[in-house]
Image (cartoon, rainbow, N blue to C red; front, side, top):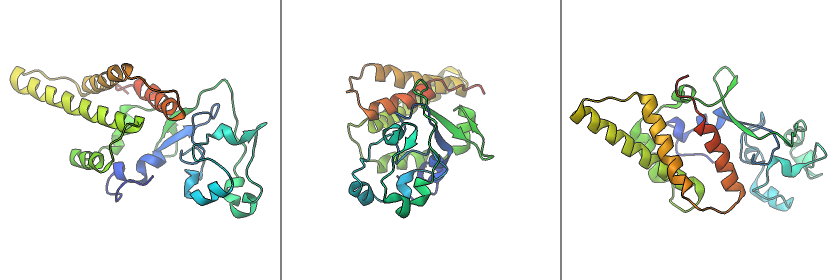
Length: 215
C-alpha cells in the first residue's frame, strides 16, 4: 500500500523498497504484497480482479504457489504477465525460516539495526500525522502501531523529566531498548488467534527484538 504523498520515508516507497524478504520455507512471505523479488510487490503488476478471475487468494504465501519446487502460475498468465511467470523458481527450504532484511543504498542486504534504520529518520510531526491518518482497529498492525507510539511518548516524556528535574541522562540506545521492552511486555499479555497475520507479525518482532543498537 502507498502511504500519503511521499514527502517522508514513512509516506513513500523508501520503506517498501528497503525492507526485503528472503525466502526460507516461504510460509510467512505474502506472495502479492511483500518485497521478495526484483519486481517488488507483485500486486503492483497484477490487479485484484485478475487474482479473482484466476481463483487466487489475496492472502497466499510464496509456498502456496510452489509445487515440487516449481511455480504453479495460471496458464493464461504466461501471455498476460510474462514478467511474473518469468521469475525464477524459488529455492524453498522447509527447515529454514523466512527472513526480513534491510537493503542499503549500495544494494547490499544487512540485518536490521538501529544504525541502518537511521537513514529513514523523519520529523516527529510527520510520524504523528502518519498515525493520525491510519484507521484504528483490532488487527495486529493497528495494535502494534498504537503500542509503539504510546511507548515512545512515555519513554521520551520520562527521559525529559529525568533530564530537567534529576539532571540524569540516558543513552539513546537505552531509550530504544526501553521502548522495545515495553511493547514486548504488553504483547506477552495479549491473547490472539493463530493466523497468517499473527505469524507474520511474530516474524517482524523476532527481527526487531534482536536489533543491535550498538552497531
